Length: 385
Ligand SMILES: *Cc1c(COP(=O)(O)O)cnc(C)c1O
Image (cartoon, rainbow, N blue to C red; front, top):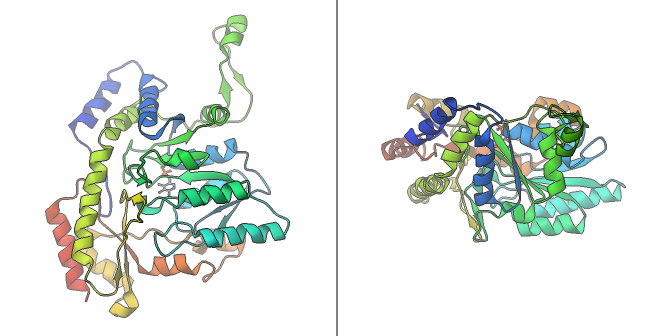
């Protein structure tokens, strides 16, 4: 079965993990720091904390930024559940803003209107989370300008876009957002199995984050001299969100191949683009002028109505041909939990909903074989006009 995404693991990844298994530390050892250093070489300068997954990264990002009751955090509904759930974990309120039709990231005109309408009701938006959807960065310089104008915190949920560039820079994210988060789940641009990371340029925020990922514990060297080598203090409530050395070693090994992975994803996307550009009733995911796409996903839009085709049937037919497509994402405001809790309804974010009705994530990952891609294209040809 050809899936929409999967990991690409080679012998050097396997060797890196075996080395840790034979070493003194399976967790809280040197491989964690090595991974953080190599992440900063690519995405810094700044500070980096690796954590147990991308959801944990978003959770303690919110806590470190002080999100709590009465705080409103805005994001697009076209993201994974973790983006808004993590706001709820902090006790704050998530709200959504529709996507634009060009690159499917947050619509900045609608965002500014939303912030203003909150202000008119005497409420202040605390933060915006930009999601670099499918590997296409948001319009970060405009987003930064809005954040500065209205004094908002800015987070980049960068889980799709490690490897993408904006205005020529692969390390663009920290130039605009106060905090940047990654996920290293197997379908993401690089993997540690489960894992994530948090980046910031703010030393104070970083030390908060490092405390939060390990129970709120602090080992102060000066106090240890006075009170004993065993001494530790808990000053705030934290979690065990650490990443193990086994995971971290896999991450360091994967990171060395990120550029190669991104090139491969772009070449697969290029073949889809060339093969599908003349087809009817389709919209292809193209990159804006100042963006180099990382194609974490290849979100193809098919106008099923015009095709006279049922999307559910289409997915079943593709599955019969050995192709397991996916949809990214069911807009979060349509989930039963969010509908009940916040009274959202169909029609609230029409562009995201229209996108959802049409979207099909085609298989794209570095180890996808060209025969497999040909089979996907041939199958599309057979089922579509
Ligand atoms: C994958 C993902 C997450 C969550 O990451 P996990 O490592 O699975 O917890 C959050 N946001 C986005 C946009 C993602 O794609």
